[in-house]
Image 1 (cartoon, one colour):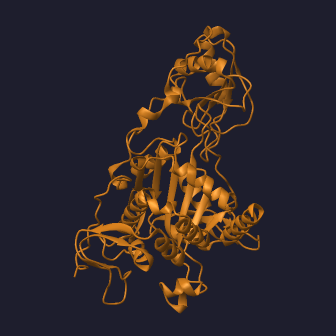
Image 2 (cartoon, helix red, strand yellow):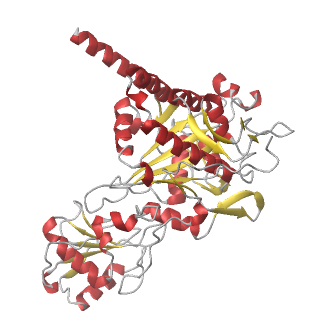
Image 3 (cartoon, rainbow, N blue to C red):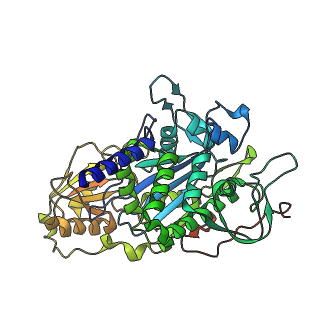
Length: 477
């Protein structure tokens, strides 16, 4: 009986694995280095969520579009980057409106038979049709300079089946809403004012609604998606019925059939391991945002990333800074080491020129200039290390705990923040990697790092239960 039960469990596990569709993670020609570990050796986790508008199955076609859509390349109408902090204390989500004009890098089909030339500027959702989700990953990496660890993609029918399996997600509208125009546009969503649980096809309508929310643009749609996702997280965490084996089996079937993922998430175990990491983040530390945009000067129906605010938001994600303003309270790596520093003249420092990052050419003799500055400050054992490297941000690396105090002493002498001092197994002694953020001068440039997402990012906290969508004038009933 024991072996029979184990065999049945194994067969069902393999059945679920067989449900999962897989695709290559990155179809671009270049990659972005993974984030460096923090002082505790932890690294962030970046997952790209993609919603496809494909009508290439009968189920998807029934839920939207016409027969003329069958066979056309799919569009990535939903794109969200989930950034889970290195210490798993918080999660940042950044949505990219589909109408945003961005560069798309060259991509190659998974079988290598076709290469798509780079586009200097195109709608963000076009990347999916240029080889698959791996091109959307490459596009995000080019836009954000953030390494994407995994992607998860779902289509229309997948959204419906998942929404049914969850059993309904509460959403709210301030007025009666009907997403419908006289010429047949709109998602068809029809709700009375107030809070209602949506599931199945109605959940898909909510996620697709553009005409009817806020100002009728794609920005309103992303805000409605954020409301749905945060409500879904709260619903799942509070739903005791998910402890029931039958409920869990139904949800597992729906989830594995709905998803297309990269090979790194291509088994039930890997998806389960990912879920345990995501569950570590408290609901109140989930921050939903939309990339700040402005109207494109050449077409008012299109958007471009907003100078300043978009850079600020993405730089915070790159630096693993929480978007909710509570970053300073959670950065143990900024503490002063208990390890006493040796006299300056006895600290050996290797200086590398890592200024050739972020697509810029290295500054000639930059390591020599910084080593000279260190010697002038009394660190007479500072030498140039010619090892090739590229660092977007300057870093002081040390190999073992007994050198932490020495490394921090070097950082303090040059004005480098202690959060940029970290332990690394890739060095044999204290190593200063001069990054692209320090291309001139003997002292590290003083900049005030942002501590909170800009207001233009339409911030929504995961614990906010009273969020309610504004209805666009003309779409009430």
